[in-house]
Image (cartoon, rainbow, N blue to C red; front, side, top):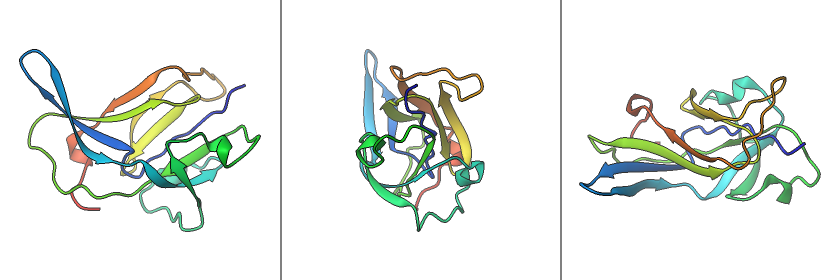
Length: 145
């Protein structure tokens, strides 16, 4: 069985604004969150809440496979990241671009589930080869931290 990931984000890993030109899509990045993230093995639905204290969680670099830090661990893991948004465009679609995740993910922004690919047990279905793009409702984002 491949590693299952419950990918939780206090806000997001990478936000992108989709602006449509007459013939092509142009992506403008608002925030790139490559770098240090808080991480914990295990699974607790309470961890999706923005108020969760992660001060004792491990710090790992993203993007990278967690096996780099947790050799031979095959189970659930939660990632969290806080970041600042200086401003949001008044129009356009906001998307979260995550790439491929091995195996399954759920993504939360400000405590609200914004996407899932694959399915967890008992109806497990891997989605290791599917790129994740989740469209984010504008009303759940906040400027500032």
